[in-house]
Image 1: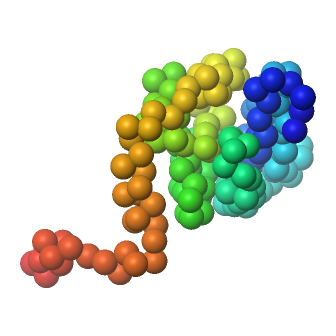
Image 2 (image 1 turned 180 degrees about the horizontal axis):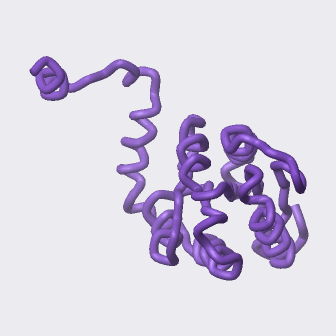
Image 3 (image 1 turned 60 degrees about the vertical axis):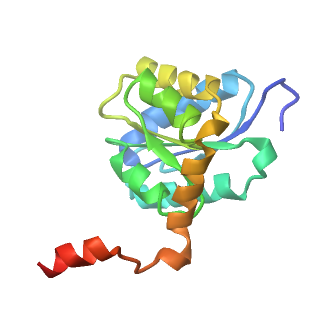
Length: 171
């Protein structure tokens, strides 16, 4: 890790729709003194968003919690990246479109992966969202909710359905 005070590790990935914004985000993070790993295609190459989502989500998950490593994923809308990254156990990826959702992704959801839509956000605006997310801190009063989310991920809930849910299906 860099000797820069407050430096963190970030993993930034994109599909082909997010190449330009991915490069801007990487440069922005590096300019702030962070260590950045980059995943995704080069110019003119096509790629599928689940591939980058998997690489970034696994890199974030492998990082030590004390490192406060984060990930940023970019595709055309950010929707596919957020869906794919959230399939990785232990990852909370948040699709954001404005400063409020960027801030709350960190404060309320402890989202360690930020998802952005390259076709929907101007570059400067997207970089501003990254800064808002970076400046926010998790509020521990929300930990109980995150524990419930983690419980949903556990294998014990695979196939679970509530009685009322089963009754609705039978109708």
